Image (cartoon, rainbow, N blue to C red):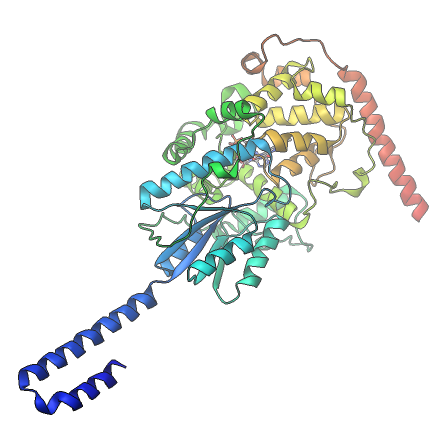
Length: 499
Ligand SMILES: Cc1cc2nc3c(=O)[nH]c(=O)nc-3n(C[C@H](O)[C@H](O)[C@H](O)COP(=O)(O)OP(=O)(O)OC[C@H]3O[C@@H](n4cnc5c(N)ncnc54)[C@H](O)[C@@H]3O)c2cc1C
């Protein structure tokens, strides 16, 4: 166009002008040509990717963010909240924790890159479509998730935005479910030890952690909700949530620093101390892993950098997390159905009275009541105590494991869609590689063994706690074993009838 115009002007007035005018026309032509080219080049180079965050709220070791920044000049960091993104309504404890995580992540983006997280609420595809109607988007990058509802969301995105560059990455697990397959055939491992051995054989699949991007540009006209608009803090139990959050830091540097301190000071005696709640020998990272402030790879690599044995108990615990995810991936109804069919017909009492006593730290068993009180005040509970209280609910109070799982789901800040139901089924016996049904924790002997000086109980028992026991462990134990036996008899009868 510019060239044609130039020829016309030159041909029309060229013969009347002196040499100076001709030079000026030529200069103007040249400058406009260069400008046009530059504009094209800038336009071509300024391509935009959405990075869709979901439980991976970090800039370090975030492959979706890393590759988006590498491949695109402009980034829209997007978070779409949907209460049921995990396939079930997110529990109150985790929701409150998410509130602070989002505030902290947004502050981090501001401080490090002068950019903001774009927050939306609703259907993923609809929200992305709205963004596409405002901005030209070339790509959508995200880190893979493993619950059925998240997989469906990701598939919808791939399907609806086929024309864009859609890329997804492994970031929430050390191993993809497809990477660890049983040697003997079958889709997934049902037993932890061979699973963990196979993981350790494939350790080279765990890459180095990605550094945080040096800079991120984010230029767009997309509006954002505030974190407060999402109403993640419970209206009714606002004070409970506030108290809960006070137990946690949301400062990224502090979280990392605390983990490094754990590695430096506590890793060596982890195996010995991890079962004693009062020793504080655990890492305390579970809610940070849950929301992706830390990645499992960052944790694994940090621990490995200490040249510890690959079979170190801490690494095995990270692999228990992997195992729970692999099992959930292939058994998506893990929170609603027994993994082993034969446990489906267990005869529960489901006493509301006992349930409330358990929830309110009023069972009269000190280790149980201390644990439930720790949960209420901090949103977590020591692993050993989680096992004892879960066993007590199922095997002493004869309350369905799903009810206990739901209470944990509502109150834990680390409430995890895979680990929580997996662990409850493990205690009941219906899970894979689960505790045998006859393993019924005696709360009193557990207390003697794991809280010998009583300091954990002293710390967490509520004021005015009463030691009046709501059941006799010995009697309940007998009833429970009888019920397990009935279950097995019915199963044998059923098999006999069929054959
Ligand atoms: C009934 C019950 C319910 C549970 N629910 C959850 C849950 O919702 N979310 C959750 O993160 N953990 C759950 N756990 C597992 C475990 O109790 C917590 O992971 C642990 O207490 C977290 O503390 P930590 O980070 O200091 O653990 P550490 O001992 O420092 O371990 C480091 C990490 O390894 C993983 N890990 C440790 N123990 C286990 C385990 N038994 N199974 C799977 N992964 C493990 C966790 O990711 C943990 O953060 C549950 C356990 C039981 C018995």
